[in-house]
Image 1 (cartoon, rainbow, N blue to C red):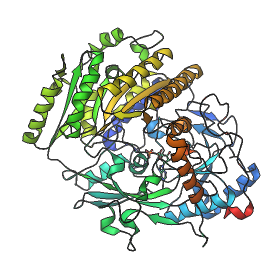
Image 2 (image 1 turned 60 degrees about the vertical axis):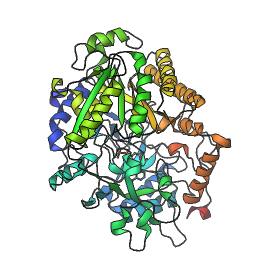
Image 3 (image 1 turned 135 degrees about the horizontal axis):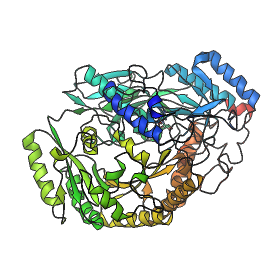
Image 4 (image 1 turned 45 degrees about the vertical axis):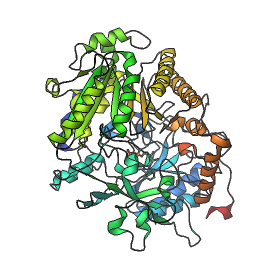
Length: 614
Ligand code: ADP
């Protein structure tokens, strides 16, 4: 399909996951860039047919699907037995990962079900326990780079919560809180605040791209770039459907924090996250212990002004002394938002053009080539760029900006970018939007570096110290050079800790390149662990390996997680394998992926006696 034939991107008024009207022109442009580089058909027939999950025959599975249809309505249960459509970020599928490291039909759903209420979610859980069918909840399913909407276990039934459960239940401008259902995206929340005329008063925090759900991103411990950037820290209160059936035949729904009060929490639920007793919220984040149907989130008061700024640094070695300068400034909140130090190549990749526009050789793109092209960009030649923002009225900003300027300029050759010199469509302004809580769509641009561009992230956490950064950078550079891959990275400083975010961009049709990408990722995970660093989040294919690095004291943490899993989900129906947590039926049967496996399905599942089922 040529890019001029592309149908328009659905907007928010047409679809809960659509693009806001104000960004439609950007979506049209982004879509044309992606489809320009695409050589594979958008829709392909399923080569392996209906992906029936392990442990059930096809006929029993189809009978179970009919039963679910009669409970929820036929329209709300859709089998995945014909073709799959890849789409792109804004029109993503809910059946599989469009950025898969493996064959597309490995991490794939057998069906998608669309609950319309908490009661529907309870019915789905009851049904899954009765038939021992794995289910996998998603809110929007745009977790791209980490598995997208795909389940870990082939043939799981995807529970797409967002399509019918997407209400903003409350926006409270006195307490600066909101309460949302799974299908509320950052785009939708922002637009609703503007529609209600509250934009002068209230800000949201948004990730680089605004199409993910507030709930999904927060449960994955995603970040944004205002002072409210740590989403998990900023949430307050969960409502969770648990994955098993109680003795009374009912599937329990619980609320955490103040929501557990007999009144259901009401006003206080979103104001105080802890309630009384153990703070259980943590077990529902990056796990497979429950299905979140409501979440409270804090909102930021409009700070009364803001000003973004950027600095460039000329030498490759500048990052280590700079990170030592950043640390005390960030901890003291002089640097007020997630400090973002991006490596020079990124100033080219965000132009949205293919790598071949700059370089045709094999192996990582040489530094001299990067610099030659950078000279033609508004940012200019540099090894690193720092993007930040100061908040508040001018006199408040001026004080902090003066300190930052003096400190950064201790690095020889440091240069402050003049915002007035930045063209309207420069990436600089995307950072400006994001850091002021306005969701954007520009971060997609670098995916076009490769035709059929896909990406997978490696994101280890370390203290914010130059010495740690040096170890991680040297390691990443070596692995990328060995595997002939371009190193695309940024250091993101949350507060005391730093996330190194490396995106490996690959051609999803290039099997050999995918092998090199996997080798590089797995090598870095193990080596980082041996140096004392671990990932904060990872792709489905890497979850077992990453979970395996958190193995202190004879795997005490995973043993505890397994104990919880067996107690909360004895039939092992909810998102088996997610975050490396396998239910008893799957455990020790070869499901873990550590590299070199030929199947993602291990040796199937253990049978469960009729009695144990419900
Ligand atoms: P996004 O909304 O950012 O697109 P996803 O819907 O893809 O994110 O969710 C990211 C991951 O978080 C999913 O793979 C899923 O395992 C988990 N998740 C998302 N929503 C829920 C939910 N409501 N309850 C439990 N787990 C969820």
